[in-house]
Image (cartoon, rainbow, N blue to C red; front, side, top):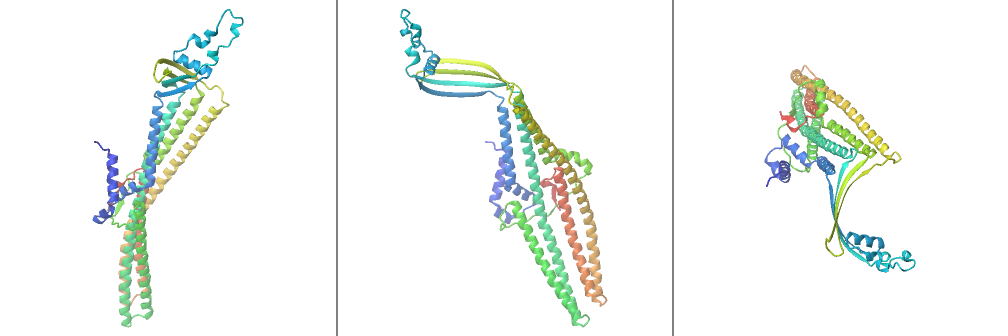
Length: 466
């Protein structure tokens, strides 16, 4: 028995989700695995997949409308209605002269032609067991079936593009949450280094105070600074906890679920320039693809509406049986073709065409707006990504310079030349430089991801361990 790849993947993800607690304790969760978990758990993605199934059914329905429609029916009837009773006897091939009242006809009787035959006007009840096999085939529909097919096929492509867009959006959300945890941990490390520095400063000031080199106000200021830095340490810990909670939410996991992350990831800057990317992005960006297919589907709806302005031609073949008992005694067949043309409907069909055309025009304008926004988004993400790349190099140099400045000022203070205010200022500059470096690295990752998302190229493999 063969099993499809999609079913195998779904089964594997389900097994992973069910065995998650033990699996999470066994080894860290890397970024690619986090994306797979999120894709499996996300309800929006399941909704899009349901839309794809709906669109596929629409394509099959439109394709089936081209084929003959075959129906089978059986029935049983008992009636003494004069018209129907006589018609059923004819269908059963059982009508006789006596059904016309032949026994009452006497040519010698005056006014015989005015006598109403009893058997014809007041027949006895007739039983009929009937069966019918009928096939109908559309020969010409004015383009309606072609319009239905075009509309259904375009809606399927739009739904599939929507699925790609939803998947890329989920990858982006997971990346932001995953990187957010490491960014929060980097903030915590900065706060930890600041705490070590504050403790070292307090120890140095306390020694100098005991030696009578500095005033008590310096000692109090160092103690206050340590308390402030400890508060920052707690804030950094809270930030990490919040980031971890956010990752749990994105992955669809309970907040209490143990979670250990794999290596941090980074996103490489794509090669090329915005001008070169734009044409490819208009073809690859799934949101634009979905909008283009929606425009095409609206064009199909115009064809469907316009078809009502033209004649409709169809063919029919029917085979019937009628029997006074439960059987198939009398057979008959009927074949034919029919042309129907609605020559006047008060403008209903014409206005339906105008309405469908207006709907397509609205979608075309929406598509043009989306193109403009895409071009602007690519340019904006490119500028921000380049700026973040430059900031990383500058922030790294700033950290080195601030660390050296702090070392010199600390030495000067220990020698009694500098002031505590200068020392704390130098330490604050070092803390800020480290924090700015953390922010620049996080910004670079998110902006590169935003650029790939705009280009329609963001996948789990775009984020590599750093």
